[in-house]
Length: 101
Image 1 (tube, rainbow, N blue to C red):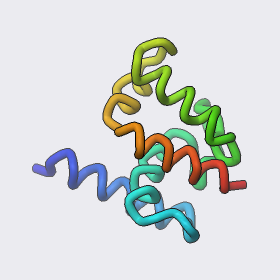
Image 2: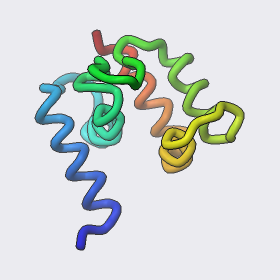
Image 3: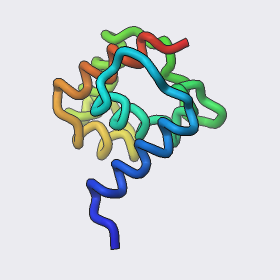
Image 4: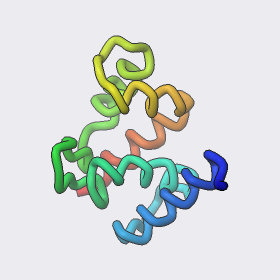
């Protein structure tokens, strides 16, 4: 049975492989950002019901994640996910998604 870290790392690497991510973001940021892509689409470009997050401003991304994290913004899955990231990780993901098209 896999533990949570193994599952998240595997999901992250699969997301990276599927989205063709390369660039300035460090590997940790790429891995945690890739976990978002299972719902928000490869490279943050949604192909389903979840909104696309590629190109979203860092400020908007950070505000949304912080609002989920504190419970100010309603949600189901996002409440749990946002609570698992540090403020620094949220900032880094916001910067990363802002660079995507």
